[in-house]
Length: 277
Image (tube, helix red, strand yellow):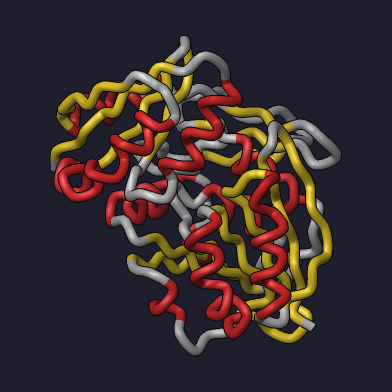
């Protein structure tokens, strides 16, 4: 499988966050930001189909960019070797790390993942926001859905917080493989059902809570399915969108019987919790 590495020159982290949000509407599988550059990775076949929309969008943003072909195996090895552990502070501290990193100290939740090319390494603000939200929620003994699971980091956090069982879903085969490796490394594989596909793979099933760190367009598109999949008084934590889109997401949730509960922000990104009443 061949990939395109889209290199975009950025002037500050805020610009990188905005561009990441815009590119998330397309089938990019991973993002990496640093040293004045945002790197976005997408399968070559997918890039050939969406570049006609992505390139004009980037030009409209006034940024310089270049698309380079990369070999999956070489890039994946580089990604794993350069991946750094992420420490999420707060009332319920969490360390998200790869297998070769030092374990979390006593009193800190230890989440081990196989980063590869899947979104959900903990480096992105939204992953940290979602993880902190899960840790502060009552998930003990409950059954949840991690929609767009990536590495499975959110499902792992939920299970380590006491959730009974998780269904982890991602449309990308590579992400599903990464998720399976991650749940094995974190010792929770027996309590996770990994499925490749979209929301239709859980049609007719009910959950006590849903975790959806995707993007605004997909959240709105799936909102009716999320509402149907939640048990009475079940809740959904959503992220992957910026402050300016929060009102649209809240309105879409309300239209489908999901009542706004709480909202937290960091660096312009939002995590929103709604409940089925």
